[in-house]
Image (cartoon, rainbow over all chains, first blue to last red; front, top):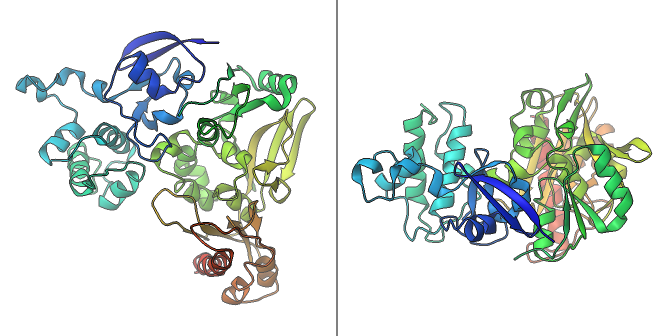
Length: 171
Length: 274
């Protein structure tokens, strides 16, 4: 048995025939071939597979691809497509504020949790009432994202920097 | 981990969903946010032959002011409940507890109806519903019926919902006083409560719900009675483990859970009456 699904992935429609039990993370990695979304714990705990579904952070290991049918999914590859792959410094200027903050605050060590962290923070900032995010709110807001390098200090610093830039940070 | 194969249906109305449940009986399972069911299916602890995805039924997404009751549609997400202005004003205990379930990603998907229908004694919302003295509305082929929260949970992951019924809404009585206490002990962020207690003020005394103190969510009836009879909160809290049957596991022995129930109940009452 199978389903015909079409999901808008980073602004482009991706259609495929998949098994009903296909998880969203497998659709993203194996059907669409986008490997930026990582699988960590596979049990809704670690957040490495975090993507945006209609702009809100979700764990793609705990969604069926069918649940995302016809909806907008954004992965790390699609957060600021105009910024390129890093080879063009001028294009890099157009990174998303959270990506820039990770760069400037050295917000990663091994990098495995980074795509999920960046998308979780992008969602957190987007949803926050302006002028409300402080360190405690950010740490609580990242409850569902684990960094096994334990590099939380710089991740939180990056999130705060991005929140300040977008006006979400507490003044 | 990948679930065992299943058929997938996405009915476009509640009526159609009930029809599918009536037709397929116990081999069908409802899918809402999927944050209780999909993990079980990935572990192959649940292997339904048919998933009926009601996750997009707008008719189950609402928060309605009915005066002394707020009706919350089953598909309201924890995130929506935690931010909803009416709930925050009239029943702050519900929005506050919803805002502490899991993590933001889980709250974006998990639904209040799914959490209650799953019937896990370690979940937070069933205890809130019990403390408020609320009820749920189920709808099936023969129409609607209202089930009081303290008659809804029958056993381990077992509820009063029939195979062909859908949980439509939670009915939350507006408490006499907005102050509440919510205490849960976890060892790590985002964990389920080892034990938790929810206290809601009533005209006289308080309603008390306990998390993870038996195979079902429980009301701490002995504490409620003591408070209604005029006992001070600290004395009433000493009776929090009466009638409980806590399990022992790696996190806590049954004796330690009983101790926690008394301590957390006292703290929840202190906050509710502060």
